[in-house]
Image (cartoon, rainbow, N blue to C red; front, side, top):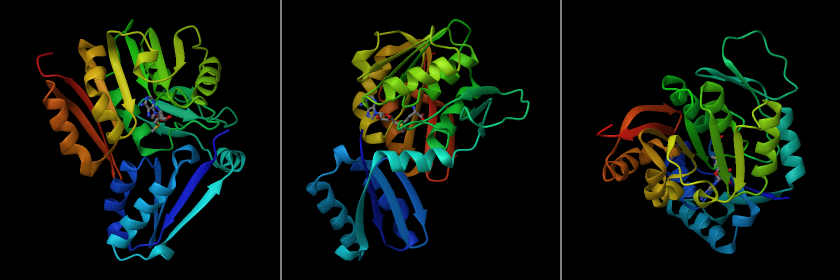
Length: 281
Ligand SMILES: C[S@@+](CC[C@H](N)C(=O)[O-])C[C@H]1O[C@@H](n2cnc3c(N)ncnc32)[C@H](O)[C@@H]1O
């Protein structure tokens, strides 16, 4: 089971936005800005002495000495238990995402029962909520096919199925995602329409897909943009997230170079997400 690296960098709040962008480039996945302290997390498998030196250099460049940086290794079970205990239902667009143990009031929204285990995708992260809102604005046509790259718990693929897609594929390089997304598909009675595989784009059929999600990080999304584009149906939607507001222009320019333009955009806190379509669609 993967352990997690919990990083703390004690620096004034003014530096946090820039530091989040730099830490995201180092592959940190989640961030919490507190007064004079930025916290960030990554799987322990990605941590190395080189990453530590890079973090210390980033802190030093903003006036923080080595004592400003502390690193803690969190055992997977502790992290998971704490996380699960704190989960509450969330509403995003046409969806309510709730763990199986939460009681829900009657709702007109699509209810997705998602128990997270170790996979990212509870709906608690801004980027997941942004994707759910973008999907709600323009749900797939009945019979559509969806591809969710970096599926985590499977939440976005399952949302696409709830919103009208006929079939969805979810892929993730984290081996923990496969059993978790599979269980979540069973919980939502969608196993027959949701296929999960370990790996990246190559692990799913080539497409075309009417809807493609990539809620990962800019540093991962940009190199895979040609492959994402190649799998998109001519009038398909590509929903990109995991991207900071400061990175928006770079992502829009990379998409424009492939003839893709924003049809809709959203932001929450420092995060940005977008639904891209072909300019000639
Ligand atoms: C931010 S989480 C998104 C999870 C979920 N789709 C959601 O929206 O909540 C990103 C996921 O992408 C996976 N990932 C990272 N790089 C990847 C790659 N190159 N191919 C496929 N999955 C990747 C991570 O393991 C992680 O589960």
